[in-house]
Image 1 (cartoon, helix red, strand yellow):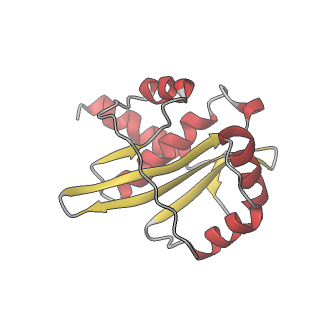
Image 2 (image 1 turned 180 degrees about the vertical axis):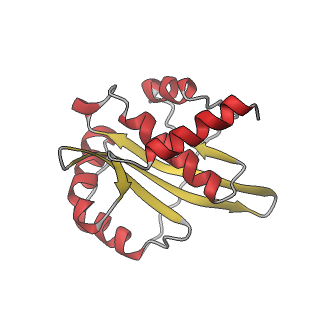
Image 3 (image 1 turned 45 degrees about the horizontal axis):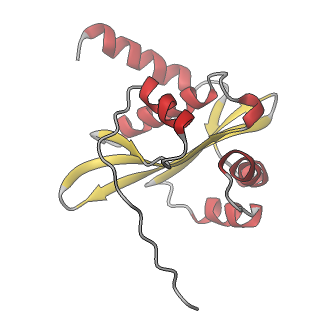
Length: 161
């Protein structure tokens, strides 16, 4: 990596860890749930988010939030993605910013934070999936240097309980 690229990356990692981005706490659950509903369209309950935050294995997963004026306005959820046949990756499980706060740099800052975390975890890359209908998200990821590496279908079979 060229020296100026290393210096830029180090600066971004330092900046990402200051001020507006922090690790999520249980009290952020209702804000994360609301952002998941309004920005992603998921039916999401704050008690489920709180339980997930409490039970999370912080050695392998993190949730970071973007905060403005003490209000959570965005979040990213990342996990260590380990496969038998490939070096470790950081897998973004969710990224969302409140609709009224989009296009202000918060998503970019959250993703830079993910990259810094991935580096600390010795990951070779950051990966994510994005629904085919989320064209603006695709443009956002491309602008951050992500490449679409494959098309696939997702199959789900619900478990009867």
